Length: 246
Image (cartoon, rainbow, N blue to C red; front, side, top):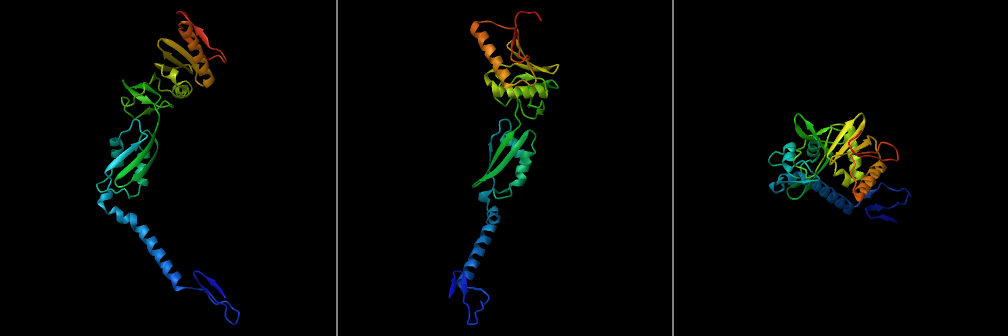
């Protein structure tokens, strides 16, 4: 005799196995599982009808320039929106916002939507139509209010070579980047100004060249010397120019 938990198999006298038939216990269990699955599937729909789960708060994470009001206007949430509504359309609306690289929308019960945002990063201020605006590493204008960030950003040409060099410069020498007042592109090179001193760099300058510039500036400071210009465009060398001559 052979038995199974979900049914019973008995080979008859003829030696032929009859068709398997589930036991009543198995049928009852299967029915219970189906009922539970159906109940779980309908749970979000049922909860959406309860006002206790209406969205009452937006929690913004990762944003430096955008405010909850900015995001709220982009979401266009109608009254009675539930945290159990489909979040994908909301996430798509945030991603389409100017200046946003990526976003994720999740729910926090009972009535909060948490929105994680990754914005395009500002590296400098630039002038556009008589006013200062933010620009990114590609020299593109960002649609953010330049008065919101606490960073002291340099003023720069809206040029990708300047923007990308500033990004690398900030990553390699953040203290030195903080001293930059102005960044310009001149004949393919990047010229940075700091406290009346000019730093000339190739647009593709490497972290090693940034460190060499930092070391020379440190040595000049240690000796109490001042320089009119430091030129790092010659591989392995930093040319120091003093005085008012060319």
